[in-house]
Length: 388
Image 1 (tube, one colour):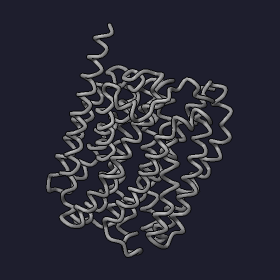
Image 2 (cartoon, helix red, strand yellow):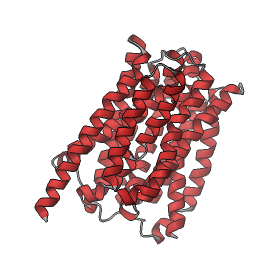
Image 3 (cartoon, rainbow, N blue to C red):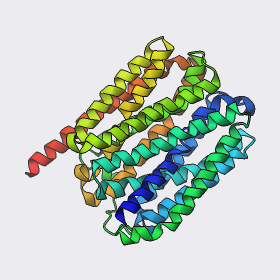
Image 4 (cartoon, rainbow, N blue to C red):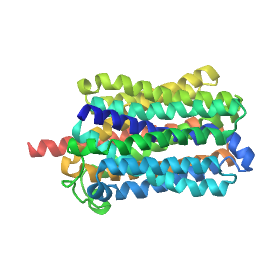
């Protein structure tokens, strides 16, 4: 039953990833049809991220009362409804309205599944969990690109992904008994840790900034890749949408590979290697040759692959199993703060200065992420040495 439940959890993470790359892939076409400036994609992304921050901070209480299974199923259903709303929206204002339930659904399911796998499974399963997110986020640009090149419009892209989400929602509700049989139906041992208390725990401010930096980099990279390729590299919109998927494909392949070696090399080492590889990829994107830049997007994705799952998996070790659900929720909120603030900021930079600053913007957050994770490692090592 536990292996079947793990398969269901993987499936749920596919559903979490499916909508995440749609906006960036479709925005060059969407904004022309809606008469919206290029920077308005950042506003929609910001609304989604605000919803995820709210639901992430509430996740510990929700999961304590309802259990991770029900929270996951209900959240995926909420995102399915939101995506259908996107598909029938004819104005920017309606897109903003439907962005609210999508964000609220995403945050809770992210916190629920990440902590459950961190506590009950190895770093290998955590990496593969996020690889399945990559499957979803890689598939959706191709769905959107197919709809655009087939003349069906961006609305059909959102509608098709919504249908997939509905199917996954039905499966998740049908699988609810598996959570109780595996002992995952409640979280009675979860500690109630408020944001104010959490910040006082040694190392928490560092991990919060690391997550903020990671999601700032990841979301900006995915959201603005098509606009950068079109605006700064002169690539057509359909091809740019296809190559946006290369970033997510690199992340997905990297996480599959990471699953085979993460338990051997450990979370810390995989995080270090990942961040260095990300810096190399950003350097390639800076090269004024399109083929090298496109390869650089793949390398950035490969580098980003182990960072997020390995930091999450280390949460029980870094802060204690009794605090892990609350801390995962807070880490998710920090991550989505990066998603909320930083992509819109780059939208303003792209609109008023140049979209060509895209790789330099990514470089800032990759460097900050490296500094914060190393400070976290030093803090945790110091604490453990004092308790031995």
